[in-house]
Image (tube, rainbow, N blue to C red; front, top):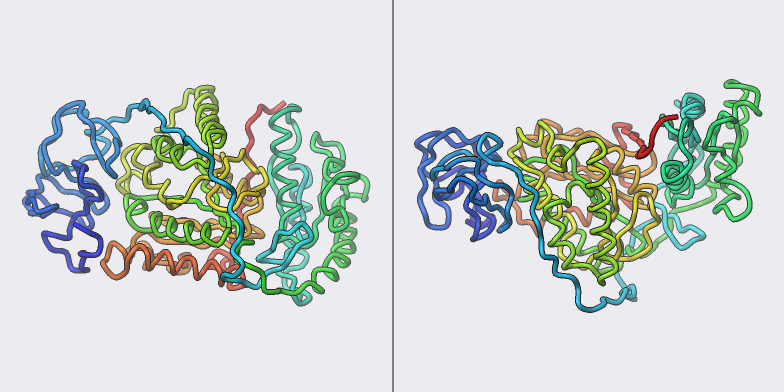
Length: 512
């Protein structure tokens, strides 16, 4: 059954969705009851047990150890014989790691040139060629020791009328920066905080330390550091303690605000958009509605030489063979696979598995294995070539579809995308996530209408209308693209209006 054939009222022919002709399961669009008859691909199936909405029903007998197939791909293996009409989930479907024969690109795709004409938005042009979608003053803690004072500085502006063109003063508190071992962990933290300080949505910033931590503020200042004319460094120990530091910071921010207020939105090409792609609280509808619709938006951005960035390495596992085929060249493919391999090693340190990723909420929403989750998550990246593969918080420079190595843990993933330079983030959710980011508009896209109705304060787009038969994937993709341009021009998202400001750097090393 095509999604276009779905009508809102459930009938035998629209109560379950099969996405690929080779699938031996269908996804229940609505709750199914024992004895209910559904029709999929011209075949009638009698449901043998209750199947919640979003969960899977067998379309034919599946032998023990036989592959369970969704999206035309393996998502698991039957733990036991499964009869036609049975409910499939964790009780009778097992995860097994798959071995893929990768189809590497045989040729090179050139970096495209931006079109001479195309869509535009009203943004803040920056000296380095990027463009901001917001104009904030950031107060970034160099360590946990300065986190509280950073928050006091930002909160001191609560209730004050800020100058024109200044979106706010926001704090970046966190629990890292001291007790670190020198090496990859501190390098990644410095790259993350550096990307937050030198961000197109930030007009000016303060880097605030205690004074004696491992992560010294000198790493962000001085010769060779970017935007030092927009960056002020200070420590509590040199400034005279908490209250004196708040006063000194306010004085410095006065000068930064004066400059920020003089900056005005100007018409800039949509090629300046760098859109982070993330999902959280996913359900089985994520790969049917919101993720493919966001993939349409991603392809539209690639067509105008803008960038989109797929994150969450843990949620590419099981779909990596499909992404490798889309790499711009073999080097990009190999770097992407390197991140998958290094993540396996990382997990083994803690006795973990990629299949630990689906959360209880994911499973309640019908996702059974990480393979199934990843195949749906990868749809956010559309169909265009993978132009680059980046480590966590690395600067995004290539137009088109990029990949960034991040955990699936939402606040850590968003932090990496932000530090890499994303000036907007699109976030799909089926269970209902409320996350945001201090300086970046986060667009929330609901995968199903029931959750959208429950959480309308948090949701910007209802992609559940696709499963309801009220809109196509292409129509919702266009709706997301249009909202991206409006949000880039200043329209506030739900997460912004509610004040969500989650920020969590990825800690990869030991405490000392």
